[in-house]
Length: 275
Image (cartoon, rainbow, N blue to C red):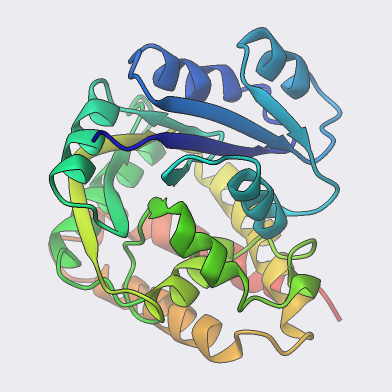
């Protein structure tokens, strides 16, 4: 029996990219697939875009980790695909995903990612970096040290995993939300599959925008570190990312060095902004 799937998209002022994300799902016309948008009270046209596309719209007063949870409990599908509002599914990827899950009921599935557009030099660096990450980490799916993480989970597995997450973290965590969910799921299962060429990111078009994006990322990490939660996980993840900057000095990765430095500098600047 073909499983059912909900694509859950958390949003906050996402009017620039949300329509592309939803339409990339709806164009595939895949039976058994639903979409919900969990909006943290956007001040732009995000809710109107969700309504105009006929998807389930849920309002949530909190940040990303809690929005993920709201998307899970709002659906009764067999599987949940955590999609961001700046992502686009590749044509035919949902049918391939459901075929994979029908053949073997995997607990988690990694969606291979690329860049949606490669018009600017920065977007080209993102695309190359994603390709190198998939090549280098094809067999490293450790939640503490790996870079690749599943986007698709059995709903029943997610519900059990969220039972282990402190509810106080749900409304405050943005950065590392995905890593926290995956970390808890891995305590329950190691059944992970990979779907090739499945998803694209709409990347920041400049290094300046990349820097500011990672400033916000670093600030959020610092804001919930004081709660004493997942310190070892975050330390391990960031140690691996810092090592990635050094790896960029190798010949195959040197073309991505400006991008990785912008990410690194933005994150560490933001991380030291909160006192």
